[in-house]
Length: 153
Image (tube, rainbow, N blue to C red):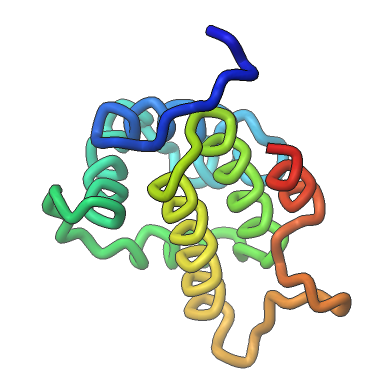
């Protein structure tokens, strides 16, 4: 595959499966957020993938059923070890890098924007409405590295 060729947009469940496998492989291996998945939650990737793919397929295409409470597992993680703005920022950074590494187009952009909204909503709900993810420089909670990755793409 030519890495410089224009990547296709996310077009359905098969593409989401590849994105999510790559994302969770990176997230599980990450020194910062990996322990939330591996040590605290003990996430079984093969059991988790169909559910999270349903979530993203519903979020992007409205073609899958997802009736689970997405907040509950994050609340359980947060009670075991507080999820910080930096943790959510790292999640967003890895999400952007994964999507950008595989796809280009309106659905890919929507997936990245939806990931940012989800991270922000979860953080605000877990930390309380007075919690801010905005940094003093006004750039928001997304780490600068994620912005750099996005601008290079």
